Amino acid sequence: MKIQRISEFQHKFSFLSSSETLELYYARFLESDLGKIYLAIPWESLVERFSIKENTLGSKMMFSPRGRLALMFLKHYACCSDRKLIEQLNSNIDYQLFCDIHLGFTRLTNFKIVSQIRCELATDFNIDLLEKDLYSHWKNHLASQSQITVDATCYESELRYPTDQKLLWESVHWLYKQLKTTCELLGIKMIRTKYLKWKKRYLGYSKMRRKTNKNRRPLTRALLHLLNKLIGFEKGLRNSHKIEFKISYYRRVAILKKIYRQQQSYFDTGISPKNRIVSIAKDYLRPIVRGKEVKSVEFGAKVNKLQIDGINFIEHLSFDAFNEGTRFKNTIFKAQSLTKIKAKIVGADAIYATNKNRNFVTKNKIKTDFKFKGKLPKNHKDQKKLKAIISKERSTKLEGSFGKEKEHYYLKKIKAKTKATEKLWIFFGIHTANALEIGRRIQSSQTLIAA
Image (cartoon, rainbow, N blue to C red):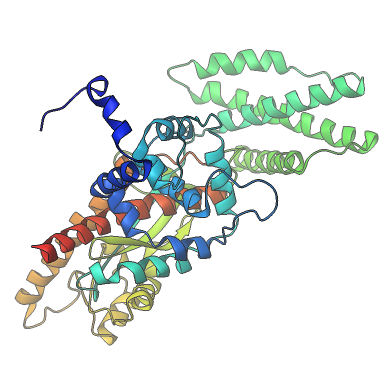
């Protein structure tokens, strides 16, 4: 096919009506990967589950209920920031068709609309109910539904690597700025501190290539003392002047107080506190020890997932560390509640192979890739071959999907700002990858029927 320049054939558009042009664009759109995702998503049921409604009073919202959901899928397909997503939406007709919007000669400039929609959808959504809707729409394109694979992964949040000194300095810096502004508004004198001195010391410490314990302990002690002094002054200031702040301010001060108690206890005893806070902005994050060679500790949401014929579903999502081995029964029960078929073959990592889980699979006649324990059975050679096949299926398809989602569907670093929006971000990232796979299967089945 000969490619022409727009300047050579632009005048030809005048011979086509707007409806004919739209139909041609739409037909081309459905052939793309984005069109495959569009065909694979049950829009009406998802809109109903998210309880998205049009405004009955006032002006209509720019994006329809379907368009708001589509924008979330599109973000993970385009794998870009909110600002770049809106820039691409302005100039890409396929993106506009996907999001049920026609901009024409207008341009969107408010890129914050993406985060506003994300916050709206994250207020109240149920992962289990949404995945039931998705599965019921996809089940005709899933083979061997009695076979599942199970594993857990961590989707990291965008966060600087936390140290005690960074956390304490951020706490001191934030509270000092707030108190200084409050004192200026009230026209009173700010408490005397050595803030500027320890600011220079901290900056010098942060530039050190090798941070020894001799440098670390005096700085930590001084920052703890300074934070405690500022917390005491803030409490006295609020009580004496009866000042009212926003709810977010009180929450942040409560977090700083908890950080001080945890860090002081850790400094005195050397015992790491329970539910340790690693970020003042994301106090819900916890250190999750993964034991990997590259990253021994990760900070983000840990997700226990199950896979049915290459399609992933979320069994459990938590920002607290948990042992995925204890979720084995729940995973099988969720798979059976989705498929309405009894699980016969389950592939799982060695951490799932506890005595409790072994007894469960034996009782329910489920075949697994767990290593033999005790005396070998008579047909152990045949069983060994089956276990090797199940293990290979899990390690290639399921573990491979983790890397694919993180690298190609914007789940490598979650950039959402709240706990609810992080969960929503992960949900849409996983199911954008699923929708593309289902869309390709739909297209291939239609091609076979046509042939």
